[in-house]
Image 1 (cartoon, rainbow, N blue to C red):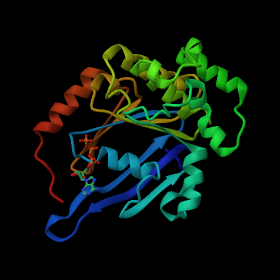
Image 2: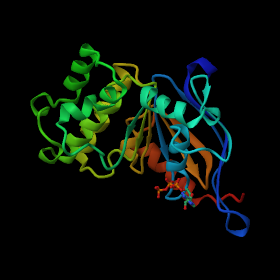
Image 3: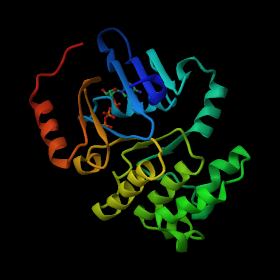
Length: 250
Ligand SMILES: Nc1ncnc2c1ncn2[C@@H]1O[C@H](COP(=O)(O)OP(=O)(O)OP(=O)(O)O)[C@@H](O)[C@H]1O
C-alpha cells in the first residue's frame, strides 16, 4: 500500500510501561497501514495491546518509540494543542460506554463536535448520517430515553458528522445485545462501503470482526497475523491457532 492510500500508519511503534524487572511492553515494534475507505478490526486476547494501539493511533496516547502518521502528519511530533485540534477535526471516536452528554438531545449530541469547533453542519451530510442511523423520530430524545443500541448509533453519527479522516471504535458493541450490535456494525460498515469513511475497530467478537475488510491479530504486543475478507468462522479459527501457539518473548 502506498503512503497516499493509508489514512493512518503505525511505524515501529513501542509502548512500554514501568521499568526494570517490571517493565511491560504493551506494544513491541508494531507497524501497520490502515487504508483509506477500509474497515479494519483489531483482535487479540485480553492484555495483548489492542486498546493501547488504538489510543496511540488516535493520538490519545504517545508511543514510547516509533511514529504514527495521520495522512502525512506524524502525531508523535505534534504539540499537544495542535493534537487536540487534529483529534477534534480529523478523528472520530466511538467508545464502549457510548459517552453521550445526558442533558443534550440526540441531535444536539450528534452536532456537538461541530458546535465545539464553531462549525456549521453540512446539512446534506447530516441528513444522510441521520437517515442511515435510522433514528429520525428519536432526535429530540435525551440519551436516557433511548436504548443502548440507539445511544450507540447516536455516538456513531456523532463520530461521523465532521467527516473525519478516520473513526476509531473501541469495543463499540461490548455493551449491546446481538440485535443492537448488528445495527451498529451495519451502520459502521455502510459508512465505509457507501460513503468511503475509514474505520478502525477493536473487538473481542468474531462476528463483529466479520463486518470488517481486514482483521489484524495482536498477541503480547506484536502483530501475529491478518485476515482479509474475514468471516466469523475464519476469525474464530485464527484465534484458536493463536491461542495454541507458544507466547513470544520480548
Ligand atoms: N497505564 C498502564 N500502566 C501499566 N501497564 C499498562 C497500562 N495500560 C496498559 N497496560 C498493560 O499493557 C498491556 C496491554 O494493555 P491493553 O489495555 O492495551 O490490552 P487490550 O488488548 O486492550 O486488553 P483488553 O482486551 O483486556 O481490554 C497489558 O499488559 C496491560 O496490563
